[in-house]
Amino acid sequence: MTTKEAAVTAIPTLTTKRLVLRPLDNADVPGFVEIWSDPEFTRYIGGRSDPDSVWHAMAGNIGCWALTGVGPWAVVERSTGSLVGRAGLWTEPGWPGVEAVWFIRRDRWGRGYAREAANAAIGWAFAQRPDLDEVVAVILPDNTASVRVAERLGMTPRRLEFIHGEDHAVYTISQADWSAALRGLPAVPAVPAQAG
Image 1: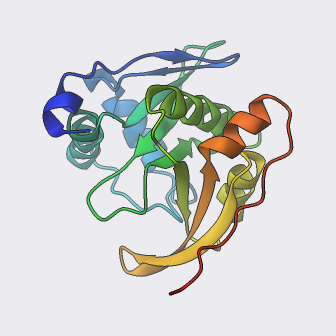
Image 2: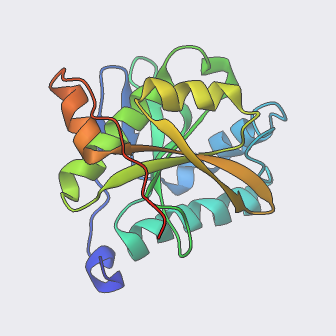
Image 3: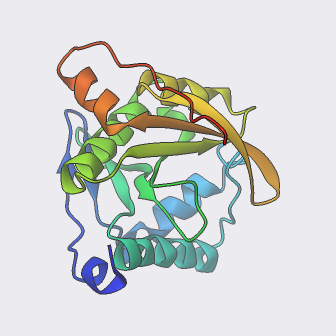
């Protein structure tokens, strides 16, 4: 997708059983400051929690939409209207692919919100981009909670890549495997590329 095509892409709103994934808004800054101020939350993802840094990170997320046609959403709990995190898609030059991302505030961990939000984002990505071969998740190997989310999404570890100064496991799910899972069919095992 060209930058010109991506720039005219409106950021959609997705609704799941328990969540709304909506475009980021200036009013989200205080909520994200609170979320990113939790050291356990940022343990594997980093990020600064002052309002200026949060605003700049949000601007980068919106820029991802403008430049690539995909990006993260604010995640809102439908039952309470509370901002509970950010999830969606990410890509940038040199990135391993279109990535499913999930960042859910710690007091909502264990409820399946990360999987629910990522599931909606992956489904949207494959529906919008029929030519997209796979979606990836880039995870520090020690982040066992995110590894479990990736596995529950049907993703499998494919390789290690050195990104932002550290080795990350790259989990993937192909569009074919995603479609098969939606139809209740067994996934076709991936055949590793042969050297040479």
